[in-house]
Amino acid sequence: ADPPSIARKRTRTSDMNALSIATTANAVRLAGKTAPSRQRSRVPVTGRFVGTSSLRRSSTLRARGRASLVVNAEGSSSVDVVSPDVESDAVPDVAPISAAEGYVKLAKCLDAIKDLPPSERAEAAENATGTVRSVLNGMKVAGETSRWDCYPELTRRNIFPNELNQMGVKNSSQIGQPNNTNDFNFIVGVTMSTSFLALIVGATLPGDWGAFGSYLIGGISLAVLAVGSTAPGLLQVAIDRFARISPEYRNRIARHEAAHFLVGYMLGVPVAGYSLGLGAAHTDFLEAKLERKVYGKIAISEKTMLPLACVSMAGVAAEALAFEDVRGQEADLRDLQRILNKAEPKLSDQSQQQVTRWAVWQAASMLKRHEASFDALTRAMEEGASVADCLKVIEAAPKPQ
Image 1 (cartoon, rainbow, N blue to C red):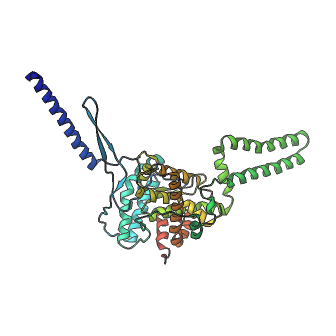
Image 2: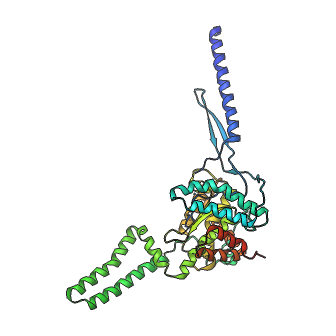
Image 3: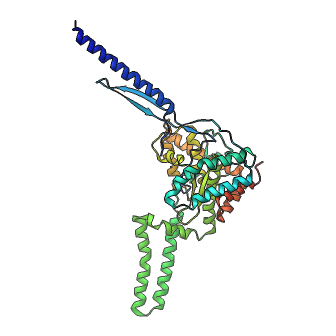
């Protein structure tokens, strides 16, 4: 038998270990109730997600912690808390706001963000999210808006290629396939123009000047090919500028970004701004939580994934409904892949393909149903209208039957 002193010492040690484990278990329970979601995505995003939204429908995002207690060989313990993406369905009370008052408030808030230096806009946009959302919700309560947050729930199902064609997609096989039409047109344009110019210089300049000029100009096309094969990103601005010569391509860009804008708006995502500028076409959403979901390390549930997927593929759907090919899908597909990689539970390759097809189908369905708003928004964005004015034309368009 152990001496009394040793027995008392072991008893105290056992009590201390029990107290430590009980205290840690209490911390686990508290963490499970209060652990906040700490997340940190053109888009763009073209159609990029810059300062974007969690796509929650008039609700407050909460993270419900899942904790585990680990006790090592020495008897010490640690708490490992994992916070999955979970949303609350609580809808706050909202006071009605008239259209006149609401659009003035929106314009004032969004213009203030636009006037800030680029480095300060993300923080200002996140801070303004609550104001913009409450104004839009107030207008919805007052019956002034019918498109804002009009798709509170999305349900996924398997979509087959022929269903995309029935929806109006002109060539579903082009979705997800690389498109080099702009690159090809640019190379052909440069080669033809430099060859023609070299011919003129050689025929008009005397002697060696004509020969030297012809060789020099002819070398431009070789230099372009060399840069395109080694560092193609250096030519993107030039390629985009060349493609914008076509009015059809300019309309394609406007339709692409208008689709991101409208689908996001109908899913309850406040829009901060947009650009159709050279090499910088994108739609910016207000809240930074979407950016964190797309580019952060936290896993996202299917409930959150589905709206994100729809916003990502909206531009692709808009192009596929109007054109035989889809040229602006590379950045959108990259964003979608980031979203699918974070889905919990994990998706197989076949499931990811099904989600992609469903997202295009769902976005196309939304755009076709609200075609009048989509066309009006496209025209307004081509004319450079402000975000508040864009929202006005969306709501002023005839309602779908």
